[in-house]
Image 1 (cartoon, rainbow, N blue to C red):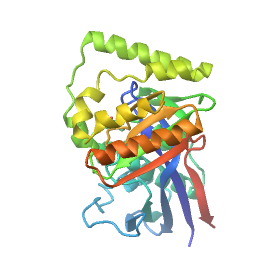
Image 2: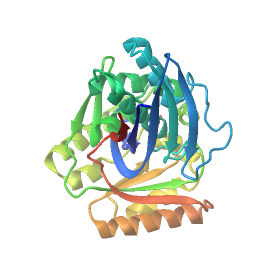
Image 3: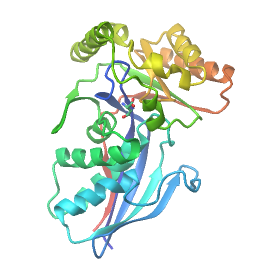
Length: 318
Ligand code: HSE
């Protein structure tokens, strides 16, 4: 039976100043999807587990039309008519509702595995479009800022949603990410529901200047500039209250020497960027301690490079 397994990395989206358009892939964690070819054109989820080997019933929909790992596959089959279907096994290494791009990673991993089984594989741009269809189902909006880095790797900036188009930004030398995930589930849908639909003009100007500065910092390896641009005046203030201890965790990261810190994606994970391994470990410890002293006892934490490699095939059986 022909099958293929692909891995897609977790990602930090928004990156403080690029709401819905900026993200980077991290080596910290990822989702893995195995597809086995079946006759007909149906898609069936045969396994869905997290890192413990189980998943609470109802934690994620098993209906292929509702599950982020399979929505893109259904669309791909509808468009490409490959003459077969898939049995799908999903192993989630990214916690649900963590703000680390788990729904995008599942979609991307499934699509990369499927692509390797097609007689004529599609370009990545097509896989990107299918991944966006999956995000729409998972989060109620097809924001591409997790799917892009998870698929392509590195730092990605989405410059158009329709048609989807993104560019990879150079990753500044020496840049490290500290990522801390408090065990509190926060669904993107809920985290978006608190946001005002409009932004003040002065806030737009301030945020645009920071985003421009951050992009410039990527091209010039200027980590000092990058740090000074990690200031989200639009979205973070509206979401901070959803994350227990957020202000304390951010302050702890900055006091430990981080270049900047903010919410990872729609939260509740918090990321910090640093320019040195020793500072990274110090920042990680300070952020974990700040979560714990805010009453969050269970926390995962990582120090990671920005992953240059996006989703990749892990195994294929001819
Ligand atoms: N950018 C999205 C948000 C999350 O902050 O709601 C991930 O796509």
